[in-house]
Structures are given as structure tokens and as C-alpha cells.
Image 1 (tube, rainbow, N blue to C red):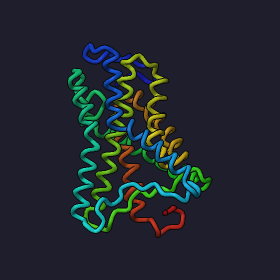
Image 2 (spheres, rainbow, N blue to C red):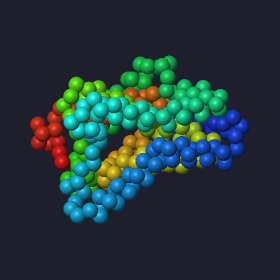
Image 3 (cartoon, rainbow, N blue to C red):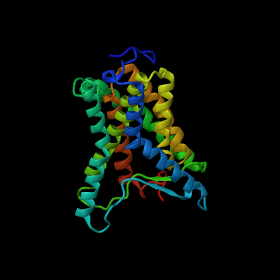
Amino acid sequence: MRAQGLEEPRPAPAGGLPRRVLGTELLLVLALSLGASAVSSLISFVGALTRPGGLADQAARLNSSQAPGRPWLDLAWQLFGIATALVPVALVAHLLTREGAGGLRVLGLDRRRPLFDLSRGAALAAGIGGCGIGLYLLARAGGFNLTVEPESLPDVWWKYPVLVASAVQNSVLEEVIVVGYLLRRLDQLGWSPLAALGASAVLRGSYHLYQGVGGFFGNLAMGVVFAFLYRRWGRVGPLVAAHALIDIVAFVGYALLAGRVDWLPTP
């Protein structure tokens, strides 16, 4: 386990590679994954701000149909999207293996401590998830957030398995790239622990900006907590479990409750 808090021994440069090479590698990984999502999210937010009407009158749609009226083709597109979204994680695993660090194991994504990961993840999900729902409702009521529609898939047999798979994909991609890999590389590049934590949190908030100001600040706060706990625990496993549980509840819960309860906003 790593040292408690933010102060911890800094990893040596990967495989003796110069810092310039590591910096280029980091930028390329981000450009292929969540860094590109952050830029896309910013463009989407500017578009929402400049569109007639308030943010709350607009919708941010997740997990929508890719081939309406053609369920088997739709399923193929859903599975393709989930699989290709995980390619950057495979790339990171390859880079860490080549470095001699043991792949994703060095980030704490393995089966060594399943009870630790699941118990800490469940507790974290309960705290973060509850606060997140409250912040979203307040931000939307104040006109700072779009109406988030977590799913709009057709009522077919594969709907809920795909929603669960999408939630797991989100959690693995984000926690491996934005917490484990990013913090490791920033440490190797000589960043202070506090600056690295801030960069991780700001990046997480940025690629959620398509949801509005509330989405940005809510995920910024989540990013601070997750990065701090990664430093403390030395594992992304609990963070992956927590994120997956939060998204599963959001996606499946919305599918079950939308239009049936008054407090849940719908487009």
C-alpha cells in the first residue's frame, strides 16, 4: 500500500525513458480518450449556452439508440461502442507492461483484494451518489445544468445488460486513465502531488461539461475525492467499483423510474 495522504515516493521514469517521451505518451493517450472527450464536451457546452432557451430546457442524452427500429443492429452498435471505448485502457496496460510495471496491476486493478475493493467501493458509491443526485437537481433547478437523460434505449431484452456494461465501461476507462495512469505519469514527470490531483480533478470535470456547470463542478469534487483516495489506498479497484455502482443505479434507475415519479426530471 502506498503512503497515506498526498505525499508518496515518486515513481522513477518509466523504463528509463526521458520525461519528454513520457509527456508525449501521456498527451497521445489523453488525445485518444478522455482528453478528446473534454474538448468535445467544451464545444457541446458552448453550443448549449448559445442556443435559444435555458440550459434546463435542453437535454444531454446518454445510452441512446444507434439504430432505431432495428434491435439487432442497435445491439451490435452498442457492443461495438463499449468495446472500442476500452481500447485506451488496453493501450495503457500495454504501456505499463512495457515499462516493466506489471500492467494494470501496478494501478491496483486486479483480483488481489476483491473484498476491499467492493466494500470500499460500495461505501464510496453511497456517499458520492447521494450527493451527486442532490447537486444535479439543485443545478438544474437553478438553470445551470441541462436535463440529463441517462438512457433512451428501446424496450428490448438486451436493454439492461447493455446499461450495466456501459456503466462498467465508463468506470474502468475513467478510473484507469484519469486517476491511476494520469497520476503515475505526472509523478514521473515531476509534478507535485497537489498539482497532479488538481489536474486529474479538472480533467474529470471537463469531460462532463456537456451536462452543464453542475456537471462540471460535481465531477470536479468527485475527482478530488477519488484522486485523494487513490493516493491513500494505492488502488483504482475501489474507485472502479464505486463508479460502476453509481452509473448502474443512474442508468437502470432512470429506466425504471422516468415518467413514474415527479422528482426525476425528463426531457
